[in-house]
Image (tube, rainbow, N blue to C red):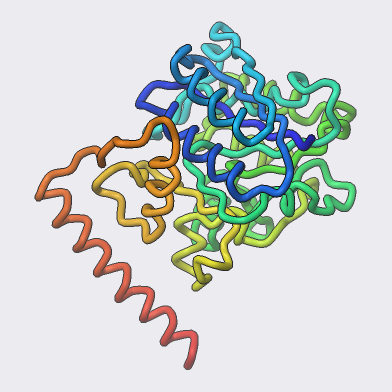
Length: 295
């Protein structure tokens, strides 16, 4: 079986969001998965629902509780919507000691194509396989970290990991030490640290396997071409304020899970009007991008 890893702190109802992500993987896969959930808080009710889902797809699920005292040592970036559980992904090679490869996914993701296609990517001797942020996001991140603009910046929400190599070179353990250094200011937490520590040690895959907001603004992929939609940013597809053109995909999968029946959060007339105004502005801006490119 192929190894899939997700991490979760169930605050803010992330149990059901994990459920939607996981179901999207299972429904679009042709193979069975060994699923590993690394968690800080996860209720017995949510575990029962996840077990029910996974069982019907002939896959396995394992739960790994993250030591809360260890997580307390990490400093979360100021002004982000993230919690310290994001640092748990740096412990994956040690948690899966007997495995050679795994794929990691964030829980604000919907998978649209067989994930094994990404899992089997050729890493060409590199430790991890990743997808780059949009060009604008890359540039701002590199500038923020005082890194050369000749480099590239990747999003760590989707990663293919050579676990054997990572245990041999201890790069994730070194990244943990880097994150724990008191003089580090890492706004995007372990993602910033990974980009610093893994210079020239990552293989880049096609943007369709981590189609973020930045990538969707700069590219014009059809929904049928996309492998993974990643709802990056503070406002997620379960929030009324979300203007993502792909939010219906989240709801499609959520309503096939044991969590079906939930409604959008923050649904007010004011938020609806704001959302539609932003969507109109983005649409006109994208048209300008396209017209500019045709000149």
